[in-house]
Amino acid sequence: MTHTEAQVAGVLLAAGGGRRLGGRPKALLTHRGRPLVEHAAESLRAAGCTRVHVVLGAAADAVRERVRLDGCVVVVNPDWERGMGGSLRAGLDSLAGTGARAALVCLVDQPGIGERALARVLASCEDETSLASAAYEGRRGHPVLLGAAHWAGVAATATGDRGARGYLTAHEEEIRLVECGDVARPYDIDTVDDLARLE
Image (tube, rainbow, N blue to C red; front, top):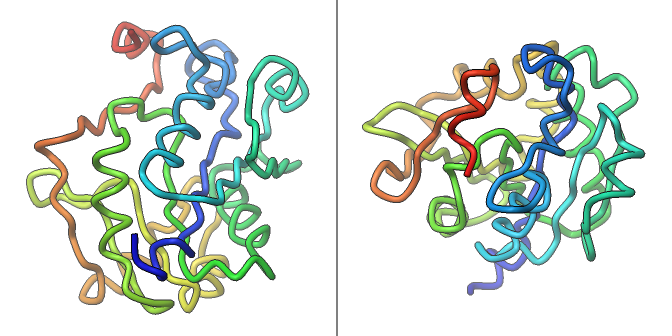
């Protein structure tokens, strides 16, 4: 691991309330015998993130009680109902003063994206100006690597459920696409039908 890679923090967005899942918080859905949030946090660590910040929202107290997030920094987004944008801002804000040069952002409801894809995108980090994204057959997806030089710009445009999308679209030419279709499946757990994808 290079010095720069050691300064990439994992930011796990796990605040969603699972509106289309009948109000079941996504962080607490079970995958391979463990809550999704625990599974995702461990994948970030295994990929090389020595610092992992987990943004909680829906049922944050229940998640803290039931889930082992040892060594993780837990950030609670009180405005989680307004969408992912606020959770992304909260996660990036929580990195202030940590020395992190980049953030590897992943979503709790994509269990098909694991350690190998995360590590591949992490490895594309060169410095604070890095901007990279996993790609699946050439289409941009998650995880996304945001160098610290981009955090203010991302935070300024992250509203509602948009997250970093607006910023990334505006900076399309700067993004390094890292093909991950051979090691990950980028499906979301959004609806009751999607629950069948959990193992």
